[in-house]
Length: 609
Image (cartoon, rainbow, N blue to C red; front, side):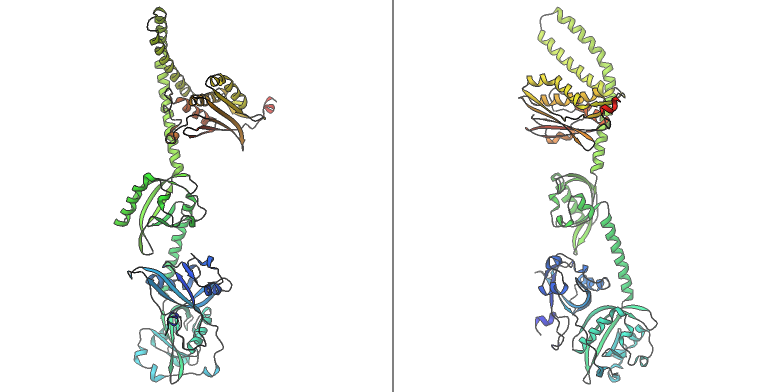
């Protein structure tokens, strides 16, 4: 017998019913990696549709356990009989053989070769073979009657013999009651077609592969069975020899497992946390939440990618040690925190739990990743708010405790200066430092004093023009051009005019101080939805990226003579106006501050009315 016959689902003994072999190659997990052209013609799917698709997506649910068991246990069965989905005709019955291809060490299965054959259509059974054939001399043997499996002998589908277990299986007591009865009477109608085709193939000398079906006992009870059949010739008569096992308990357990697996899959796919499987440092599975978290359009964009491509480099060693620990100790690891970059370059912060798992029977890890970016931002905001609160409390005490003696000190120094010409340079330094202390106190007082309800509708263009006029002379002296781009229409906001003016002064002065060698300051006003957007862009030295997140913190500054309070006060003012302030900067190219404020609903004309 040549290799093609060995791979055939039926032991071909004549040419009348030789099925066409349909060859495909799969991974051990059941995904198509090769399909012959005959497969695509037979199933109606293109190669592109089949590549990467799992075989179990095409198998009838009731036959799933039969096929999955063969893959899991790596059984080299002669043949399986099950239903497979076609694009045009729905589910059809096929017979298939499975061969496992092993690697060099003969332990790890690299590939699964499956050869499928369609079970041919069944012609009408020949009337001359519809006789009853009883072979008592052969089948009344205790060896068959006491066999620990159900044995059924038929001739052209008519029952000839049942051993004792077969009688129990079908719920009958006397074989004589079944004489001449078709086996189909005990088979569920959904399986009549495949049994009829199988009997026809048996009559042509072909074996009928392992199949799972539903049969009906004499009392009407439906049972699940597993059967296999071979042709036998006795006294020059061809008969069908069926071996049948009751697998109702196994199928019930299978359904419990299937339901449990489906519930688990629903939990995985509907989890708000990202759940993934990592094998050899690559993503092998990730749920929908993970796809969304990493800004991917589908999970295929992530599968096969190295996890360290996304992970912040400072967490690489920590994560490698954690995965090695989980795989070595086979126990979960405590929660850790990390930061990642998404496919769109956005930075996210996560909590990460790692537990042991397997991938195709090989050690792997399953991870649960929770996005805590919003929580971290809220915590950072809370820390800033606490700092502002502390700074405000300190400001009240510092301002009152220091300002009065400071005024006295300055007064006496001025008096001494008028009577002493010597050491005038020292006096200038002293007064310069005292003025700096007064500046700090002034900014602290702004932070400390309570906000008054002096909000009114103001055209932000007019405020900005006044501030630019005030600071334009200072800018010109430092060879800086201020370019003001404002809309022609009224741009009203509800604000405290003095506070907003202070924000503009702080931002423009910072830009001027950042351009020691001259440059340009561009100020632009525009609308976005119901918001007024103001941008201040300079050509200054820029702010290092590592400290951008700290801009606005009290007492934190990059300027030699700065206090860090100006921007902190500006941030607080914009926040109190239900607005938002953000900053972008690049070293040696400049900085852009962006203010977003709510636009007033009423126009000035309506207000005057």
